[in-house]
Length: 415
Image 1 (spheres, one colour):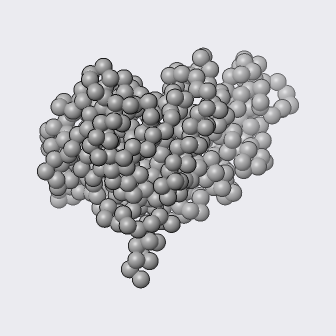
Image 2 (cartoon, helix red, strand yellow):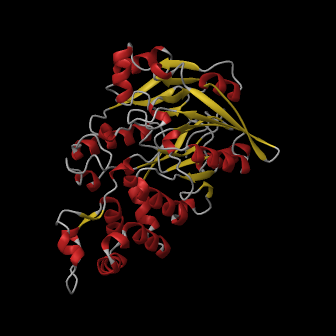
Image 3 (cartoon, helix red, strand yellow):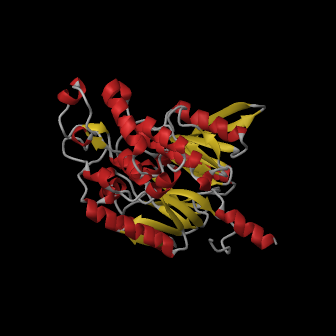
């Protein structure tokens, strides 16, 4: 009976660490939203290059198969959204999120809402993710200044190509999900989509919330679950100090953490999230960009008599080891020399996804970093990312773990 109870527990949404054996994960296979990218809009939509979409899909399919080959259940976000839209409340929320009445004006917005109310669930999911141009709008009676003054290929509903990076819009902490408040305008609709999936998909009908999308900015790429009860939150380009403090207060109130480390990071494109410079690869090991290893600091937040106790800053590695109850964190450097390290950090060499303690998925192009990981005893599952990486994200960015076995339960198979 004890073994059966533990097996059932593994399949429920529950994540305590970065490296517990991964059992279920949400990915988003890229689609038509990437085909909307052009040299005219890719900067606004936060892509550094125009990806070859067919190749990006092939690379993503391989990523998913690597995970399935390790016994991981892969949930595709587009399927989850389509299934959630069977609920009328989810449809209403999706249409509300997609149609901006202030930008489109009353007549165009009303016509578009009416049209989307009647389309099949899969079609609605496609429009909400892939967007819609003015030439694709349904025909309407009467004249419209809004239609006349927009070019045919202007977006009536903008695509959301960054949905590929499912880590950012939500993160599971314990048995609760935190819906991220995304900082960049091009990404804010992602939270609405994630929110309605967790609210209306039958699989998540009993999921409680750890944080809400209408709170101060926090993005999942900045949230690292270092150990049960220990959470690091990067504070920089995407997550604000107010967001980190708000999430910490929520985690303490729900007894999901005893220590939160707020980690200031440089506010640049290269280090937009904490997981672009540091990720966990084993219970006591991180892969880290060496240029910041000795300068990274952390403020320790802990609950005290119903209030917040803030100490520091102190060196991140020291603060993390103390909170985790270990002597030290092993550090595996990105790259081989300063130039290689900078190149491989830019190419997501630090952005690994752990599928079990000491087993990670990484982009194959970061050859020096992968070699260093293997020399340190880490098994590296290499995938191609020449096209997937054009939005600046690696395997961790592209995955939202829904359940991981608790550390110590590695012998329990995923079901």
